[in-house]
Amino acid sequence: MSPSSSSSFFSPSLSSLLSHSVIHVSFFIDFPSFSHLPYYGPVLRGWFGSHLFDSPSLHSVFCDPLIPFRPYFFYTTHNSSGIFAHFLFLDSFEDLASEFVHVLSGIKHLHIAGKDASLSHVQIRNDFFSPLSPSPFLRIRLISPTSFYRSGKPCLFVDFSLLLDSLVRSVNRFNKFHLLSCYPIRWDRSWRNIPVTVENYDLRLFSWNQHRRKGKPIRLEGIFGEITYKLKKMNDEIGKLLSLAKFYQIGSKTSYGFGKFEIA
Image (cartoon, rainbow, N blue to C red; front, side, top):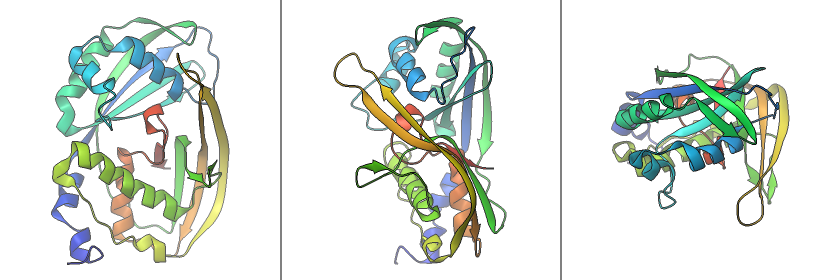
């Protein structure tokens, strides 16, 4: 049976994946003197790797360079008083998420980017994959910088087909290592044949030199903001795929929290 057939799209592996839930762990970092960077993922990633995981089980997951993809996704948001760090696990990693919350709950004071801070409000909730209702308009919010490259240069825009193709790659890349029962997921990629126009957008470029203890800094670049697409038609395939953005992140540099988006 060809990968483009409807039966391959509505496959047991897809149904199994949509039946999973997402464990969303978040905590708040209060900075007495807040520096207001545009994004904090690279800063907090360094702190996690250096100071957080005294637990041997967590260290083996979060710090082992031999693991090609971590069994979670990570991103940050912030407001006028501090930073929210978010970690997303599938429900099949419930024990790992519980150990993570236990370790976080024991940390009160920390030192990040040369500043003293405190950690509070560790929260955990369950989210579910809910396919989108049909609508010709899709407003996509790039919550964290999203990084795609063409000819060695960062893309300053994300077209609709690129966004969905990247989401498919992210799903299959993660599932191959951490959810083999749901690998591979095949798609018709019907969105490539649907006319799409851009109604409006408000995008900004994020650029950051991530310093390391050894070697040259790593250049991190991406865009974040909002894009509103207008589709000639919406179908089940697109609706089901976009529901997976509840967990999976797209593009490169996801270990720094890049590629988190939501349907606004």
